[in-house]
Amino acid sequence: MYLLYSSSLKARTIILFFLVSVFNNHLISQVTIDNFSYTQSVVASGSSAASGTETDPGAPSSILGSERDIFIQGTSGGSIIFADVSAGTFSFNTAATNSGDFYIMWDGVDGLAGLGDIDYVGLGGQDFTLAGDAISLTISSADGPGTINFEVYTDASNSSTYSLAYSVISSGSPVTFDIPFSSFVTNLGTGADFSNVGAVVLSGSSGSGVDIGMDLFSVVLPVEWLDFYIEKQHGHPVLSWSTAAEIENTGFEIQRTVDGRNWERLGFTEGRGTTNDISNYSFKDESALSGTFYYRLKQIDSNGKTNYSSIRSIELTESRPVVESVTLYPNPASDVLFIEGQTGTANIYNAFGQHLMQFELKNFKNEINIAHLISGMYILEIDAGGETIVKTFNK
Image 1 (cartoon, one colour):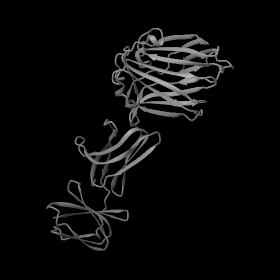
Image 2 (tube, one colour):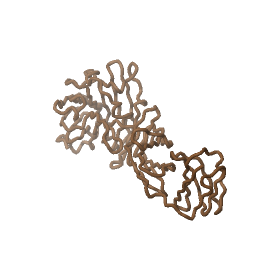
Image 3 (cartoon, rainbow, N blue to C red):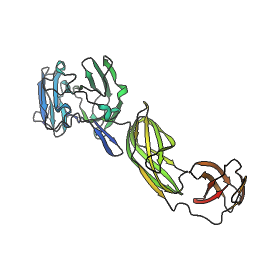
Image 4 (tube, rainbow, N blue to C red):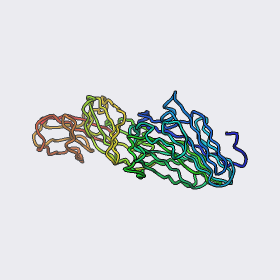
């Protein structure tokens, strides 16, 4: 805790500020604005202003542009306010009887931190779109309502802003706000180009008796994945996956390959749009019969951008025991196929695994019309009370 933090001061404001993107439990790309590993303190008294700069030339991944500017100013009262960066935390503190504003600027150029001193192209055109489609901010605590503002500049003539209003947030129950790039409002010119960022500014206020804390500021992909796996159920692959959060997620296209190169579309599962809740999904591939199959998910967001999951595989070798009590005749068949010895749901596939027919076997002797099928080999699959029965026939 900073030495000037006295009994007259309220609890500190805490900000951890990153740009990071996570996908499939792997780090795909990362643009760190600041992990606050380099210490810095700025102190002001009352309505007077103070600013300071910190340079990190040896570790550009620690501070975006290798340089950080902080500007603070009291807005009421006469007590000391200060900003303190240490041990991976940015803290903004005011006395209980006064309020203050803070600004943190990343523009890649050492200098004063006043709002008129920003180099709007100092970052040299950082591409935030490589890390994701949205900015995520986690506020860990707030004992009163407030607003956090962030600005993204392409240059002095083009910028976009977003004002995030929050209410009371209990300590220990953080709230995450996901803000798509598309939700930013044009401030100057045509707005910021998130693939060509020249400067970033974070600003906020601490009112009298109001304390806030922020834990994570990040650029995220439309979907944060928790898990993706495949298991065999009744002889068929069942894909299951879950997400921790979704941002304007249209849904998932399920894809399969047998050679690792040519992917086919099996189906589509709708997403939940925007949510911070855990979402669970599943898909059953009824056309996979035997062999090794590879699967992936193509996630599609509302603006048409796509991301792919990692690849999962499954081998089907012992999934379909043949029950000799099932009899097919004639074989080869012509227009009618007789099936005896079993009831249940039956499906017919061609030799390429394409589903052609589904019907119910209601009696132990069933007459099935197959006149529309062309000449070739076919696979009959019967789901008989949890047991999968497979037979082949020719026409």
